[in-house]
Image (tube, rainbow, N blue to C red):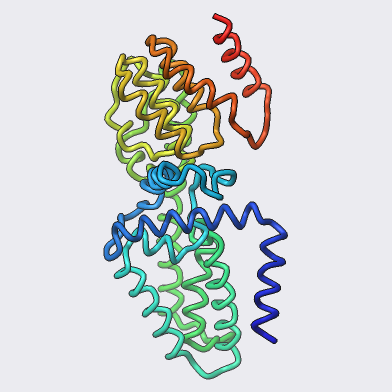
Length: 329
């Protein structure tokens, strides 16, 4: 009966938001390919963000008629923290995490408070199979908090001695100093970001960039700014995290520098990353049209007009109109 309830319940939950569920299944399917290529030691810190979209593009190259094409999108989170650990730190890292949780669990106190904390940790671990709590700082804090309370008893009252008062004051001072440093760092980053789009704005300093380059949202904005300054080549472009949008930006960047072969590569990769996105194919059509490769331009134009889009917008209608005008000539 329990098994039947689990199966039926799972099916009903899947039907409630099937597109969201299929999106997660696509991410996990592509993640399997990533794990297969680096099973033991993974890709390192932020390895998922650095590599995932490239693997998704390769998946759709090999499976152009995949069931998952309609749900493909830019991916920032794997929606499973254990898969993220495996991808970034390999099977070795995942095993260490499992052993850590297991050792805390089996060596916990036999008390009602400990059982309550176990229940809380269990709920959080189950949630980690389908979402990204590691990327939400308040939720991330619950992991060490609950693990600590499982191991030790809760004491509500204790006598504060003079030594304890001194230690508590020192801890508060250290925390305040640390917090002030973080605030100053965030202010410096905010100032740098505010000047990104100004004509004479200064670039983010090396130390600040190293701290925040792992943030996917920052990478999108920063890539846009770097590419707008196309008169200068910047080595940081090589470290920009891949996405459909950033690859389209890179394609346009290399067009500005006259490297049409590299521009074609980035547009093609972007079109494979999200097959239902019209922009990369449209950029590719414009490239072929401008460099005189009419046969390839017509082939891409036909593919664009035959595309089934998630949403038809004024932007996509304008692109299609320009392509139809091209046919008249």
